Length: 164
Image 1 (cartoon, rainbow, N blue to C red):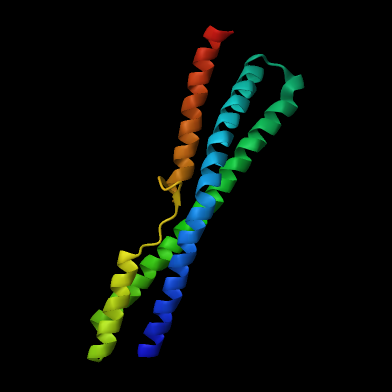
Image 2: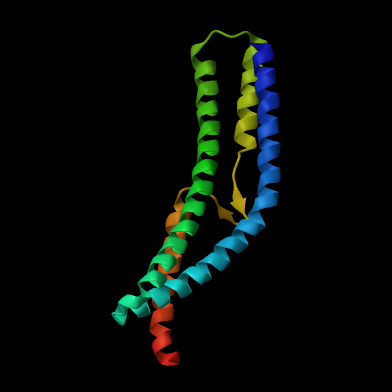
């Protein structure tokens, strides 16, 4: 059991280091992508709403391209958040398995210490994906992204009447 715990410990350390490096590499570019795509999405949706209100069927292609582009960015965000949520859930499942092992199996004193140390390591070094060190990447992010784009779309539509 000791060698298995030691190999789990090494693997978890590698996964934790990889997640830290991944956070450093993808956080800022994805945050910039979200901000720029959000602004573009709002402007495209504003154009789509204006064309829809004008009942111009010749602008049907613009509406389709605008909606497809919005869906593309939403899909990218959902995919990233889905895989980060899977990783976090796997760590939580590992913690449950370790806790059940401690509670249900007869272990030697050394094995119990090793499993407790590993359990404490997984609790202290949680794997969390952050965008720019600020925004958590979980499955709530796509819904928040859509709601922010919708809110700003409404604001842009309301103020466009004053600017036009």
